[in-house]
Image 1: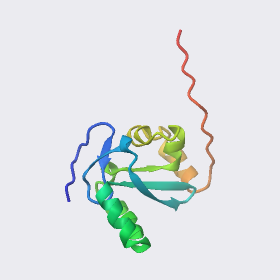
Image 2: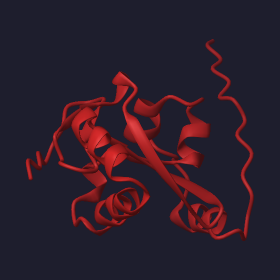
Image 3: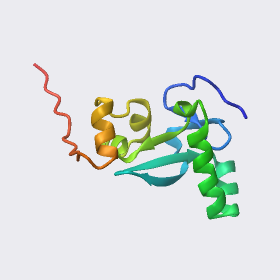
Length: 125
């Protein structure tokens, strides 16, 4: 594995091989549901091609492997909530995430609360 502990802004580790992945390059991804959230996992072209060729069992295994890595916060992973909050922008979803308290995030994830995204209003005086 090529784990790089600190990727530059807008980059993260491939969920398969940990190589540097530019999030603006529209990487291929897999997703799964966890509670009310959809988790997204992104892969470099080499891992993506391998997973596509190997099929569904390999793809499920890749998701499990990514979730089991102790440094998973460095991997190109995000949630549907973060993507929605950033208008579908993967870089913003990964780098900024959703700035809500953990208890609120978990309540949304486990179906005990719902979220509505209200566009940020920037007013200058």
